Length: 187
Image (cartoon, rainbow, N blue to C red; front, side):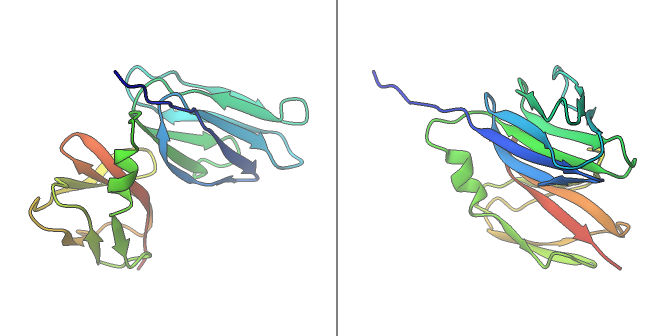
């Protein structure tokens, strides 16, 4: 019998004006804590926008009296949240299943794409056995999905006329998310 020691991590997200820092936060594991902290002179709110089925939603005030808010995700998946200042002030984080030896982090470190920002096509570098790439809008809706050749380690991905803006790119190995990052599409 052997034991694997696991330590929960606190991930900090600053709220200042109409921005979250960082706006995309990946490789957060179940049991970790997301902590928003107030970083402005004006009160703000952070509210869940789109969470995985079964996950708890939140709506938290951040001000001089409530300078931090903690949320501990209980469900794997992509979480999108917003600020009360502007409807376009949206950010996200990805919750992964805990793994004993950080196998998912090793897979994620073999993923990359460029250029970013991108106009029409980008090169996606990924591990063998990566099965699909998804592009999501900032509300969590899949706007494009493509199968990858599991015997190859890179693919050219055409954006099929996506409008300029910010997106999330997810790379999956079957049903497991192995990589997620922000994608910027320009004219």
